[in-house]
Image (cartoon, rainbow, N blue to C red; front, side, top):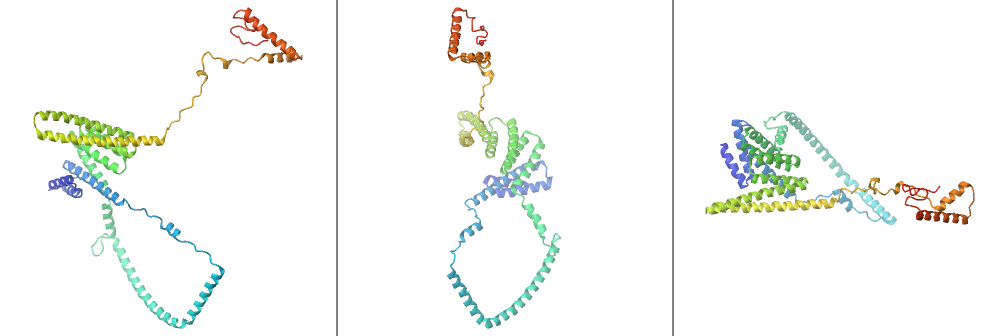
Length: 425
């Protein structure tokens, strides 16, 4: 009987009847669990199918909800709108106020004239009101007694009629509040645990499939870190067992790219999409080589099937390339908006950066001849006229010129070649 439900569930899943597939897989899992236990090996595949169907159903529900909310206008605060509609009128003059007060006084006088007739009607109305109040009080007493009885019955699981109480209904409602996404995660975890225990290549590939579905659930919950971890583990298992051009490996790369894209890691997303394209391109090359061999054998059925597969994969490659281009454009746009994040440092030249032969910063500058003559005069305590200053300076320059012409390269003003800028004593 469980096998029949599994067959129906597979057919419904392929045909897109997701809700019916969930129901059939649920019945199959319940029957097998009641007969063999929750962690029996025969429950691994049904739980995987059941979790996959639940994941698809959760996606359908979220899509329908999102489409229903599209176009719904946002509700504005009514208090603000009411305040805007109320406008203050113009202020009244003293004459208008007097006219209104006179009209009120006239109306009060007319009411006092007809007060006797109205008094009789008021008395009869008061008598009727008292009778109505007494009836209402009796009804309230009856309702209080009934509510007390209901409260005492609600303390138990069922009331006197044997119907479930409100507490039992709330417990059932909490059980129903478990989302399909959460239920899918629990079922897939059970399936993964059973496949891990079998420890074969086929079971390890099933573990990779469970990890891929679990990553999709984490992505739906916006837990991108866990989704990436599950997909990386799935990729490592598939790369260790499957050939490098297998479509499942390309699918894993694509799922990684999609997860990185929604999480904001655009550079990693672009790399993952590129890896998916390379894997699919290798698969196309492999199919083309197979097609050449089959065409020699004149098997048109297989050759047509291979051509269709090649066209399908090339279309997928085109879509992934377009997605990668969009991601690259978004990444460049983000970088352009952000601008340069690092400010280039200001280079300050140090002493080591100066030329080796330049020692001007180490030598004290020589005073001019005019200043030296003044200093010498002040030290001797005398007073030299401007004419004597001029004669001494002229004599000093003539002596320097003579020593440079008549002397050797070593002759300098009271100095040597090693210290050519020594001061005159």
